[in-house]
Length: 156
Image: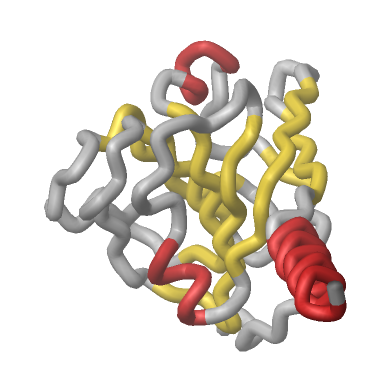
């Protein structure tokens, strides 16, 4: 009987930990024409979380995704290795302004993908979201983590 109680306690803790690590945040994208689109996202803040990203995911709910948070501005490339879903990538500067867009990244591709300018965040969503929602460079995103990530000041 004690072993069953220990097993159930361990199972509960594992479920609790897995639920807390997959908690979702809201991100609101505001287009320049006044539309607001809310995405529910997982945060990828650590190197390990950013490296794993959405690999091996077979489903992504409507208007859900992942927000990659970098400790400073970067131009690190992304790829689709081990990712069976087509994704759109929305690259944001430290102020949450859209600075780059990649539409319908090819599943499993090892092609390196990145914008021509530095970025601090990347919002990955289902392929086809960018044209469906009319997302453009210059749109802005209200981030749940904005201001919490140290970045180097831009030169004037």
